[in-house]
Amino acid sequence: MICCGDIALPFEDAVQVKKLPESLASSRWIGNLEGSLLNGEHEEVEAALGKRIVFNTLPGVMSLCRTITFEAFNVANNHILDACSFNNTKESLKKIGKPYFGAGVNLSEAAEPYLYEEGGEHFSVLAFGDKLIKCIYATAQSQGVNPYEKDYVLDLVRKTLEHYPTHHLICFFHWNTELEKYPQPLDRQLSHTLIDMGVWAIVGCHAHRTQPIEIYKGRPIVYGMGNFAFKQNTFMSESLRFPEFSYSEYAIELSPDGAVMVHTFHYDNNRSEEHTSELQSPD
Image 1: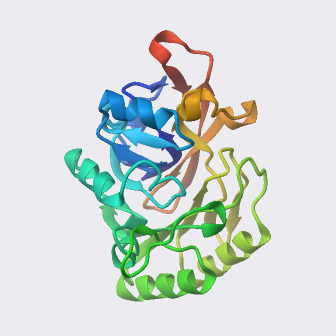
Image 2: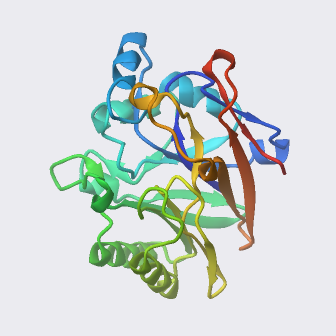
Image 3: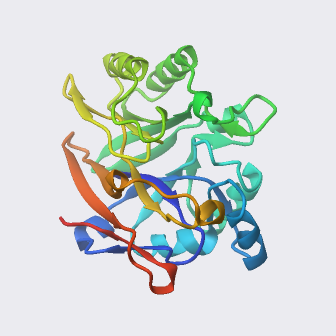
């Protein structure tokens, strides 16, 4: 499975992936869907672009899925409720047949792991979002993301490991602060504790830049993958853009045999044909 960072596509072909080897394009991917998933009606999109929000549209995500084989989307982030209710995003994901994890109409749904099998090995995937970066927590009665609270994370991870003892558990975290180069000490400490408990891999998002990768007791902790397909100079009345150091991006391949491979991408913000940006893989 290949994990990648933030995806925010307001219209079809907003970001085009170039020079991607077929071996990668046809692999199984999990992406971070950064924001609500709208149907893509013109008036709705134009109104949303003028607000201080981030979102995706069905045409935008579907065009990316024609290039890359996305198996599922992580939806635990601070923008998932920006443009519509989670029920609307949920229905849109059903239309394109993509499972999701990390958020829900209530806490029970948000806490459900995504399960998959690859190479004869079984995997469980959990995702969490931090309220300190304005993630809205799900409760027993309300929509939101799976909470990033230390005791809650430890308890849910423990229960998941007990319930799926033969699975490799992967944890996604939406944490840290925007544009921060290094992980927070408490995030690093918790990551080590989770690996000690038996978590197989940890991957992080939100900083909009790549952050360090650590191998702890033989298992990977990727503190920040950076953006992936995130259209710049478009959201928030064309004011949302990131520094050039954010143009370097990671996609992390976690092989069933335990191998880890880092694929690097470069975002080209100078492309202007039909308002399309390019994301290039030099591999």
